[in-house]
Length: 136
Image 1 (spheres, helix red, strand yellow):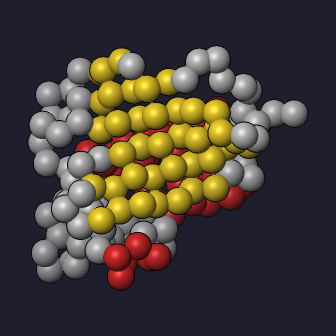
Image 2 (spheres, rainbow, N blue to C red; image 1 turned 45 degrees about the vertical axis):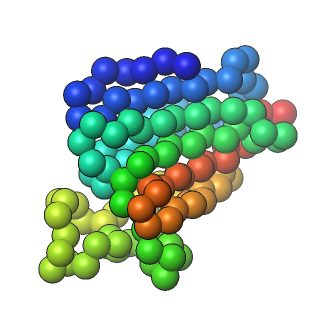
């Protein structure tokens, strides 16, 4: 496990090694991770850690980004990957953004035959897991 220094949000990385090779575009993977980390920073209180876990799971590599923010209400979970959607109502939104980061993550995952899923609960935080195909 390794921690990257960031005063507002320390990033704790748990990387299982060795990992099989993934069938992904490295630039797109970088964009996916960047968008997930950006979201975690935006929606978490300062000082809370963001956890990144990378593990082999069968014929996939699971890349998880988890925050300890306020979480997403259950009735909005199915909409988080919609273009221009943010879980906070426009009138109460406390963070900037267009609501396209997670939409882009979903689109990039689909183009690489990967999947993306979300698990969240109000008051607990949010976990996004991308499952990347392993090279055969």
